[in-house]
Length: 251
Image 1 (cartoon, one colour):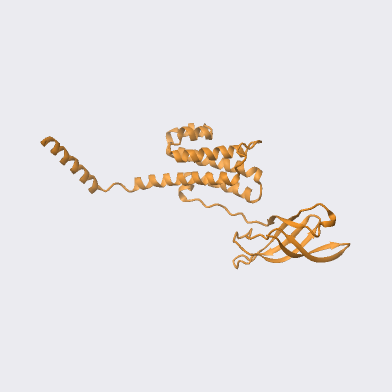
Image 2 (image 1 turned 180 degrees about the vertical axis):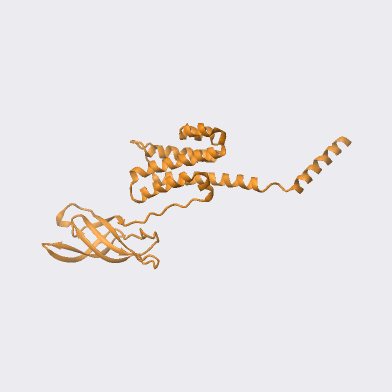
């Protein structure tokens, strides 16, 4: 939705002020990550674009940030009349993804590498963050498999991610999610993107699904191990079996 703000610009060493059209005003704070309606403070226009200073209204933040807008025309005569398009904001405070203790215990390296990739993404380094997410996925899958199949640790460490998923992942749901994440992440690191209709967000969704399945599997095993079947129930089953055997013999 187009909006207007007053900004200063310079012509022949003289300062002028007028309204400039913006395609949008950022609705979140790059520092506290809150949804906001920012308070406009100042803007400046030159041949590189428009820079607008906003203040976060969040009482726990109240910090200033600069929103950068690019010019939608190269015509010098119409630069003062054109609409400006949002590009990015600075500074930013990176927000890391929180993982459960189950996932941290399964693969601390996955958590670390995933957040490094997320930092790259938030800093708009999209050409390298895909490779980071791919590396994080490999740590997650291999550490999970080594935890489950300790005797095959060396083989798992040296096999490719695809071979590990295909040969060692038993749960069909984890296998399918992990394979799709591996396909997408592998495609993101190549010159030609095989999965052209999918993007980084699709890759992250599938990695999240893989994390969820692994977490559910690990928690289920932990509960089964920590909460044994009640002894009374076992005795009751045994008694019923004995009674059935006695009945069969009597017949």
